[in-house]
Image: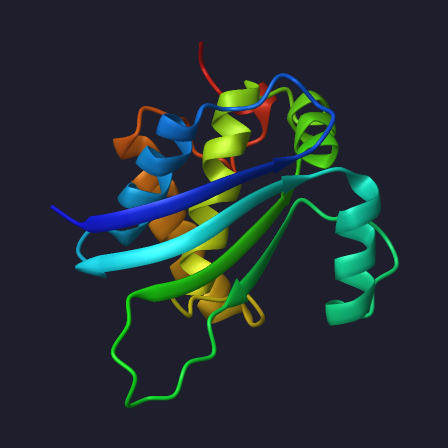
Length: 157
């Protein structure tokens, strides 16, 4: 059992958001077997805050679904602080609709995806992307969700 503390901050006007318990479950799934203890913040925001952060930290002047900010701690400091996730609720809702996915499935994917980024996984090159996508698919299947990379029209109901 992981010693986990997730601080969920709701800074969005959206009302159809996952529960704190769901977010904690999704984070715990991504961390299972990878960390014994972790502390992180999941901040749910609207487009403007997402756009500002994406512009400042990634040079992209538009909102995005999830931003991951790994904690930058000195190596000799043994604390379980993992970092922060910033998830843009309107972007996640729009993507779920466009991809014809249940909102909860897309939220779970964004939380798992962002948490894996905090652990150091990435998808910059094809090899890393394949590893990360396979891991995400397995974790989400374990949570009862379909492969997030399969187009909705290919999913059997």
